[in-house]
Length: 412
Image 1 (cartoon, rainbow, N blue to C red):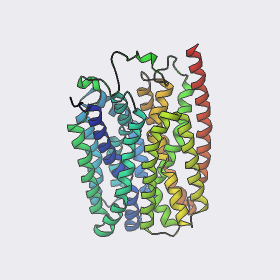
Image 2: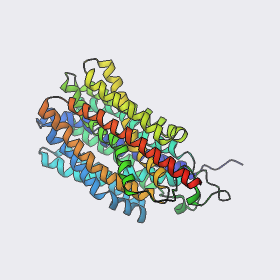
Image 3: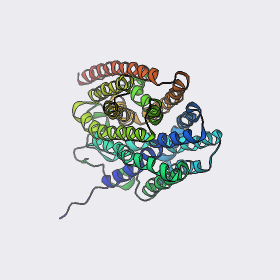
Image 4: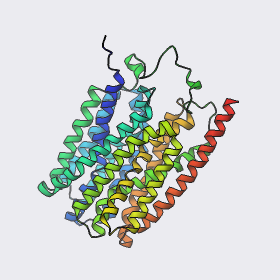
């Protein structure tokens, strides 16, 4: 008798499509669109980039409310409405001419996108008892794959039709990728569908508090541990904000918009490969080793941007390394908080962490372009990035020692 496909794989497909639409197209390709807007309108880079700041702040303010509605109300309708709000706000840019209009659009973008990085890992962890690190990595990689393919297409669309028509095309494509899977395929947990997670066996399933790999720590971690977790992921999440400036950075050192688009594609290839590898690496070698390795590559990318800006092949390699930052900001938080807080507590804490992080990231997204406006280069950003990676690396060592010590106490 042919074995029936587990519904978890259908949920995985839905999550991949949603990730591709929201993150892959709307968020990751905005920098290319904005570079063209700056060239035509003459806005200052810092002023237009306040869009990212407002989006992050609104996301931080609404993320917990959006997640509550998702998990306590009709999840399909909630996610479809949120995604549609973001898509429509991007499409409406085709009519904009004043800065304040982009700032209003940023409000809807923040409401529509903020909860996605929290919802997707939690839903996948609900559905996959096994291989959860791999499937989360695979899903997050969808945004990198989409951006790697769509970035040069976006650049060509701008050259052929202009940025206004391109904004409409981006919005329409993302609307299809987000709304239809949300309404037709999404189920937030296997219990809702009357089945078990993939890999779960009722006769051998242990109580939640007895699961290994830190999934259900018995002791409640101290508050300072939450702060350390934030520091551990702040380098990846914070430096991801520079992706929106890649095209501007390329132009600032004498390259064309096409080179900026290639750099964005290289970044997204690093994003794609990094996420595919990260989940499996975290499952096999541990979350702490995985993040530290990626932080090393991220610091190397900052050094390349700083020292090898005029050597294009090396610059492309650095941009590829830089793409690994997305794994730290998307996959790592869920798995790290799962290790520290366990299955019964991590959902609340990862949502709170995402809210706090968005405020910090809003400051980064605003500061990076203003550094360029004031100094004429992004060199200070790269020096700051190297220091940030060092802080996160050291913090991870402290967290790993804490986790190992707690495990020894529980075993005794």
